[in-house]
Length: 186
Image (tube, rainbow, N blue to C red; front, side, top):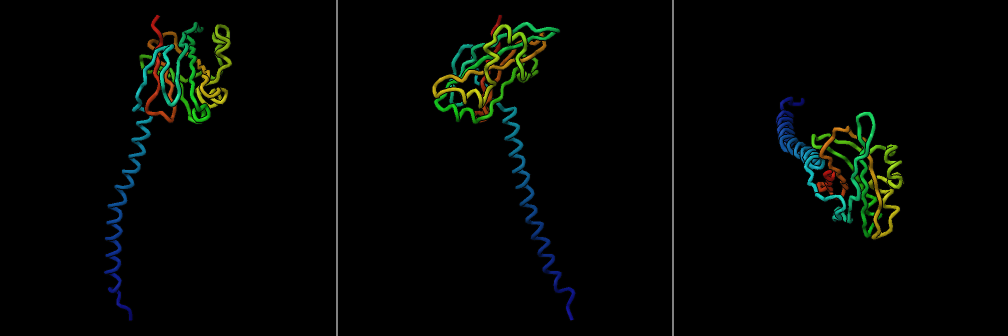
């Protein structure tokens, strides 16, 4: 006959070993997940601006960047159009073009705008050459020769009341650093 109490010692030992493993594994899993959350938050919020002025060449993300124009154009119906033209010269356009790039415009109140997909009629009329330029990223760098500038442009539709505008250009490979160019004072 089988003694029913013979397996109790082994099952208790397995239970306590499982509990000990859980005490180690659970905090380790939480720490790993928290680290990823901290990294994601830092990439989004813990950014470090690299300030520059319109027309100033500055080294960023392995290229020599210049914001050549940051101009506010008349819009209609309570809005304005902001045109940003910029360029980046690098020895390796293919490598620069493989990194995702983000361009944003923000105002002094913390509001942000992404570039519009199609150029506003004010941009097409006043600066038609800007319409031919790519947004920041791969296509612009693909068209550039090594050491020659990749020409880029972005236009934004903002409320006419928006003030203290700042253009941000961020390359994924260079985060948390990003270029920060303020609208010239009138």
